[in-house]
Length: 139
Image 1 (tube, rainbow, N blue to C red):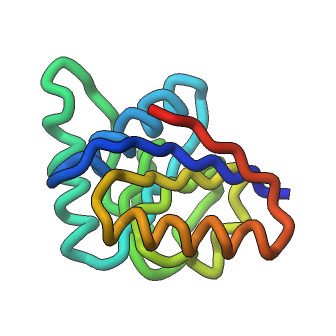
Image 2 (cartoon, one colour):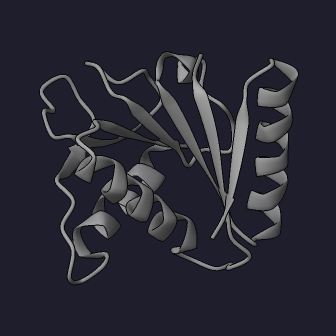
């Protein structure tokens, strides 16, 4: 069964969710995992892709936009299920995508932004109602 991990911070503002996603993706990549960062739409995916190139200034995370030819260990996309096998999905969308349960792990980023916090609560209820084991980590 898919492992669900909620990463929770009280920090709010532009870029907080993306910075958390980078941190989790970087850790998973160093463990040899393949990661799919799921965004809510194309604009968010472009923003995350751009941010991953510069955050943090001392780091590096091999990534690229999801697509049929994409081969990087970290893919950033939206909409459809990514091609190929990925171990971890980092969900930055407000909903749980239909394909979430095919991943070994799903990481949910919850920030102090009221709208994102409320959407995170809805996703938590979604997983709990379906019997998933949920772990929460305060950052």
